[in-house]
Length: 118
Length: 113
Image 1 (cartoon, helix red, strand yellow):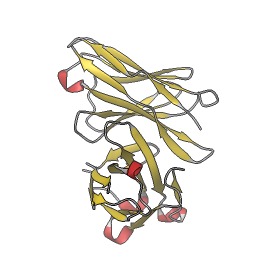
Image 2 (image 1 turned 120 degrees about the vertical axis):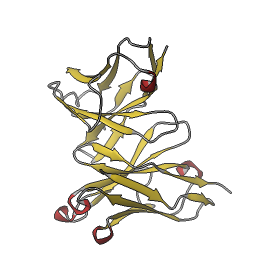
Image 3 (image 1 turned 90 degrees about the vertical axis):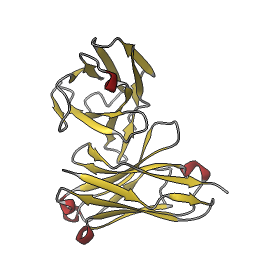
Image 4 (image 1 turned 180 degrees about the vertical axis):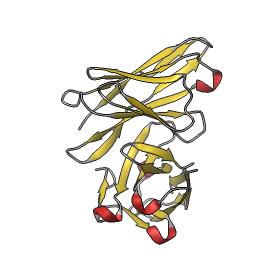
């Protein structure tokens, strides 16, 4: 059974940084692309970015709203995905989900809440 | 970038059927989409991948009551024999090959009467 467990959320001041983690199990992590998706309170889903697998050079893509501030990385030896968030803004407040992508997203984590506020 | 248009809400009686629509913007009518369900207070759940041909592949454990279909730029999710646990938000997702990036529809809130 696929399991994705996010951690690292919390309260951070505007301009601050935070690193989210996602622990994966139940599938061959190194074979797959992985995504981050967020959901602001009471709003819809917003794609944040993704990392490809080793066979595709771990290349990454990002949404325009986070490009240059957020960095996705992975450690296949630890079956873990990361989201480094810098220069955080109040509008980055959201639940952040880790997701397994085959062609479309096929599995979601339970999410971790990030609150950006002074 | 493709835009996915969904109606904001839909409702139907317990045991009846409801058909949700996700419309792809011009130039993207052949895109594959995915449907996701989000029950109140929970994480999203993948329901199915749906092609422009109408072929669909459901996720593990998704009940037979959920079915997909397509017509032109429209992608449909039909829920038959509606149950109380089907009360949820339903989002569609697709891929923008130009950017590249992924986009979600704004979601349809389904109420079971």
